[in-house]
Length: 456
Image: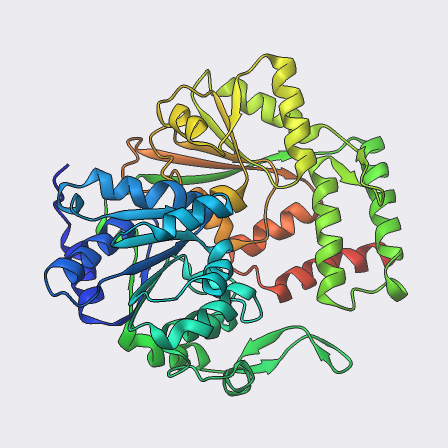
């Protein structure tokens, strides 16, 4: 296929070529993969500025997306590539093949650094936000070899999905700390003040006045940001809530379990982020209809969301529906209901399932945001998504929606429905997402409010 880039794509291509260090923050659907590959192609064969490129990406994106884009466009046919995923033997063989581009999933970056000479002169990080944790092995491994790399490109649609604190690690892998400082403690002291704490333990921070503007100013010389709505004619995005209410007996069971969980906390308080996260998870499970016991068994509480999902599927009249779930028992209970109804479905976790979805042959596709949140092109198969369970992660939430709401979506409208259990933590999570605030502090506040309701 002939590549005819939009003007904004031409600009982004030239930006990558002219900036050895680049953070390319493109909204979902703007074609960051083809943009980056075109820039790499020019750097390899026109200006001869690079000779060996490493692309680090989420597993499915590393395995499927980058090579598909290389094969898709005529002007990239001269690029040779090797995909280093799979078993140790498969990865080793892939890295020993001669190629222009090597593609590895981020989980195997440490293995690569520990076992092979790092002789790449350009590194592309597909989903820069996956390097937001400065304590993670992948971050430390990349920093170990970072001085050997002369060109780094970080790609993302959500650079600060968890707040401004994430930007320090993301930009350190790009510029080795030149703009936001070499140490996280210095960055934190300069731009943030302590927020929530338990004694001497601080578990959340707030930006200082004007911190956001100053941070963005410091990284502006190596960053570009583009919104899809500014450059593409996007379909209308419609979001709605499908409210479900518990019966008196179901509410009594829910409240009894919620109270028991809350009162089992140390001193009955949400003292730490760990406590808040664990309790939020339990409350979310209960809102969805079941909860794991301490021994791993599933206790069912209600089927209200399953009944709602059945109604939504019926209302689709056979048109494809994507269902996002979060907990394993959600998946088990959803598939049990679909089996009972005789409705065909597949989990979108394989090439076959993705192909069938994009061909419009799947009435129901089940996706987990953590595995379908990045890089997959699913817009050809349908335009309606329902969230069975709602995630706190704004990044995964937005990225999952962007599998349908993106360039190439033929429908004029993309519909996102949320099945919300009334008077549960569902409502608080959805409110935080609408405010684009899913920070740790928002989670803790939501759980604290629930605790106070129980104790008060």
